[in-house]
Amino acid sequence: MIDPSEPAVPGALGPPETLETVRLPVPSGLGRLLVLAVVFVCAACGLVYELELVALASYLVGDSVAQTSVVLSVMVFAMGIGALLAKRMRCRAAVGFGAVEALLALVGGSSAMALYACFAWFGQSRSALVGFSLVIGVLIGAEVPLLMTLIQRIRRQDAGGAVADLFAADYVGALVGGLAFPFLLLPRLGQLTGALVTGAVNAVAGGALVLWLFRRDLTPRTRWLLLLVNVLVLALLATGTLLASSFERAARRAVYGPGVRVAVQTGVQEVVMTGGTGGGAGAGRGRKGSGGPLELYLDGRLRVSEINEYRYHEALVHPVMAGGPQARVLVLGGGDGLAVREILRYRAVRSVTVVELDPGVLRLARTDPGLSRLNHHALRDPRVHTVTADAFDWLRQRRAADSGGRSPGPSRRGRPGGRASAPYDVIISDLPDPGITVSTKLYSQEFYGLAARLLAPGGRLVVHAGAPTQRPRSYWTVEATMRSVGLVTVPYRVPGRPADFSGAPDRATGPEGSPATLPPGSCSAVAARGGNMFWGFVLAARRPPRLDLAPDAPPLVSVTRAGLRADERGAAADRIPLLRPSTLMHPRYQG
Figure 1 (cartoon, rainbow, N blue to C red):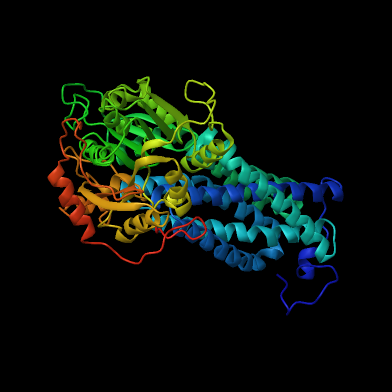
Figure 2: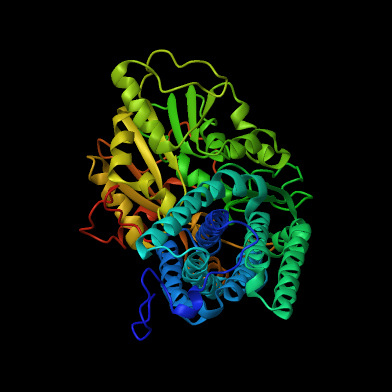
């Protein structure tokens, strides 16, 4: 950060006039310690802002490596710009640092609320996200040069020692901020209040350092102006904190419609449920009750719509139940209990194991009157056992347990597993779209290899594989990945709305299941305009499976034998050949 045109001063990091020793109200050693403490706090707050933007990029724009990379690269680029701009403020480092921290506290603290407002009322937040990343990055980048100048003014030190002290405090603060965000701020305060509280801490730390420790560097007018600015920032952040709950409710109504009746932040995701309080003979087959059709959103993505969920779940479950034994069934995902509802319609089923990551979804599926009505109280059936675990990790543990003769853990009733159990006749993978970054490993070669080892002789596996027409390369990569582990596949597709499982957030649906207010380019908007949209599935087994219905199949609304043959031909007509399988080290899905 040294300007070559300026005269060199031994041990200095700036021009001579900025390095005059300042008179402090405390001894110089304590003064340096206080500056390093503020460096620690500011670094923690800065990383919280950064992680907040990454989380918002995932939630509001779409969960993909690309979105995270954009936010981080823009911020790092902006930090470089901020460091360069700070060179011009070194002659008045105390005033410059005070102004930077006040502005950073206001922008960073209000970023979550502003971005959520853009998404809720304007339908998009990508440009605002990049803008906030740029501004916050510039302000964070300006901190270090100014702090370096201030710490040198307390007691001159060689450049290497000053840099080491400053960066040590900065990196330790970043560690604390990085741990505080997922384990303290997000679960305890949520994204909105967590960002606002972080901004308040940032403002107090920066303001106290300048207005107290370096107050003799300020003219009376500047001191009062900075004090007024900091009080105003704190007042705005406090007002935002007080209004956060009301704002969040209003934003939810704008996103999900007026019928929100459940909104909880579990340890895994945000769960929002609308409608579904009416009963009636048509419950569970798309007819509305008095409370409107149930819709379940996970992290802003529509996962279940009572209007058409039966089409998806009938197509997912009933073809795989044909062609062999049905006694033991494994469901990966499916914590809403809707796939289990279809499985239990077969009398031959003796045991169903559900592996679901989010215990909050399992709890709602058992206790919520709307969702439990829709799934016919399937998770309360004595044949059903639920396990709270990541599907990939559970398969690995199950494989290791089978090798060692022990089952991988307790069921929902807490009973120990005992000896390893028999393989499964049917495995149903009811997981989010492969375009979602956190789901990529659940569509990998390693995942299907583990699942295939759990199949009994004559066992079958079915996978929800995404949207074959909207994201054909991802769909056919799933099929190629399943074939790479020795399975014989039959791809098929059924008419539906793939946005229910897509990687980007969805918005509220209208009364007939079409989107009410959607960004123009979204999959749901395409469906609303009459575009051809499908749910894509892949049926697989060690021997060539046949896409059919079992002789004991119950009466179905949307799936027929003739329809399945047409669904198979429709999918095969759009096959993309010669695709490579996706692996953990080389994921081939695009978000």
